[in-house]
Length: 497
Image (cartoon, rainbow, N blue to C red; front, side, top):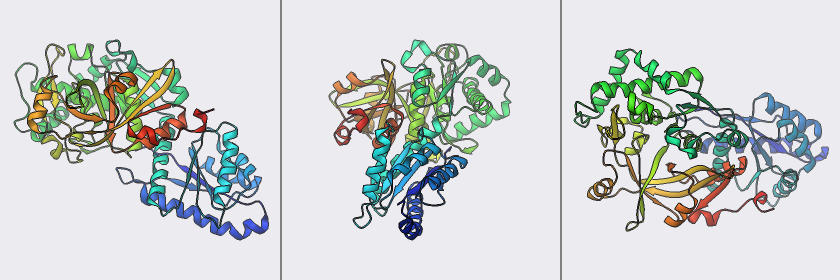
């Protein structure tokens, strides 16, 4: 998974008789922070953050510029400013002005009575905020699990922001069925995130798909047959080896074009041209979002149904924040007031990973069926993927817009592992041949209906509220947190003045 270097530097006292004595100890503190963070923050693939440590403490304007230039040359895209002793606050400026004011900035200090790092942090970070910089502050012991969890959440957010700043969303097909909440908001997205879009007609996918070698298509079909013995429900009409093969072909064609155009995330329009003239997108979208295919383990590639760009952007944020986990895309389909739960389902895009939350495809596919696509909607045929998501905590989110201003709906919740007969009865109320997430969200039904911005919702495992909020605060996106987590959020000063 992509990552960007993180610069870390210690601010120090200007007086030579002070910094010459404490420089070595302060540099050891910086290294200790780096070691502690690396031991805590690991991506799905085992990678740890890449740090660049300033060669000396910042103790005069020359050293401030020197360290800043070191970080710039190393390509650092975010900055941690460490405090362990009293420092001279004006030195923050030649450092930050050299590194760049557009970087995510974390001010990190001990809570030690002997050495007034807190005092230095508040004085120096306060100077940055006076000039309008949106910084974050963490004060605590590096041996504290709670403190390190805070740092991890900020790092995850900063990595999402700095990686997405120069990414390209590959939009295959564009504006599906007139869904304006999913259309790419070019100027607003550029201002907040820097992510841009490049559109390719679905016709190009079909042309590439038609000319792919049958041998590679057969690999995909045979892999699915082996994973789903007796659970591919052929009907000699909508679901045949030919129509399933077309779905494999679209997946391979997207892989090829994603690599050729260097897309970092993508979306497939599907309806109506592709679904009525060539194939349904459920299988290729699932495989894109999964951490494996018949060629073995791979990094999930965010792919949104109906080329929903705001969904894809949300999924990409969640992917970075979780360190590379697959993410969920769902329709907001049915609320069951008697149970207080939602049935989130759509005709595709649920990564098969969520069937058992395993990186072993055999464990996930043991819970999956492939059914013929609904002819009423998807005339070209293909397979619909059916499973019920495994139980477990999730954070639900969605990027939305109000009057040209971006906001992020954020809610803790969970996928419920309901009894089989109850799941079957719920699924029958929508479409039992599609994937379902039986979801319990914090906050009321009325709150959801009042605030939620679209018909598609995204999710990823765990409690991701704090890193999502950090990401929003860095970028200027307004976080709309609902449920119990809303009460625990302290609104930053820039939202209050």
